[in-house]
Image (cartoon, rainbow, N blue to C red; front, side, top):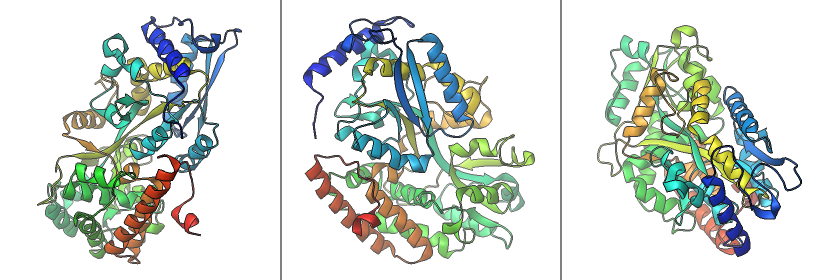
Length: 467
């Protein structure tokens, strides 16, 4: 694998990006590669950029369409062709496209190892110079420390756009009925679940048919027990991957304890996330561990009954006594967009990312979707409800936000973890067996990555590869 773009192209890109970010809004730079400008080709034909996104459902789809339409109006020489793909399908489709050498110009990424794998293979264009131009004007409008998850070896690749975090959502009416307060510690959480448990009410709704929801519990346990630094060292696919801390087994055991206590609904592995969410908003489950992506489903006008719109709240994952991790950390990811290193129009692609990451675009997205966009000033009292305003304050005050394990691990190692969590629910694997499988899988991944130069676009699952 190449480690750097050819020098000639790199020089041209730096020059193009410098001209671009130095131009007033709406003006096109000159002297760009191949005789093209940021508003069209040298022959006057529009530049067409392919953009892949997982925003395939409303209201995100329309919100992105409006942002693109505004860009087209201001930049008639550039056309953005958006292809929405369902998220689980996207995970395979984008790897196939990048691996075949025919990636879209701009594409969605999850932060962490998912992005880092593309970066190690030189598949993503760094935009550090554009971010730092004009005294770092672009960089400074990005909220908090979210850019750190897009930065590797002092180069930044792409922009984070949405901040999603997981919390325990709870039914306020059921908590009040049983005189239960939001728990601050894990012992208090277990006691609350015991109190909430009734023949017609499960303490916790869990829909794990897609495998990843259960692992969110394990991710949080691991962070609380061992801390972020330990996890980052072990998850690194090019690192030792020893996983020798007893916290890994303990975290899995603590999750299995919830199953043994009969706190979940029946057959979590056969329950969809949608069905679990319905159990929650119909009062058949008191608690639902989910992400802020479910805000809209629970708000007035969403899937939940109108009377439920004010009947829910949330609390952070409780503290685990004796744990070495930061007990106030949030758990979540910074979803965003990157530019392919193979794009024929890097300057036009950077211009669109700047537009996407502008305050105007961010506020437009918040207006329609009521989600936290990682642009300073995007969430205001005028465009956000009390839930989003509170969430934005929590993110701002959080000591750290730790990504979920499946976004930090190599993909096939993450699949081994997700399969293990399903097996743990079914009692077909023990925590020790799961960790043994993870260690073995990561050793195989490291050996393969070393042979491939540090990056792989393989899309097989572990089971397929074993076969």
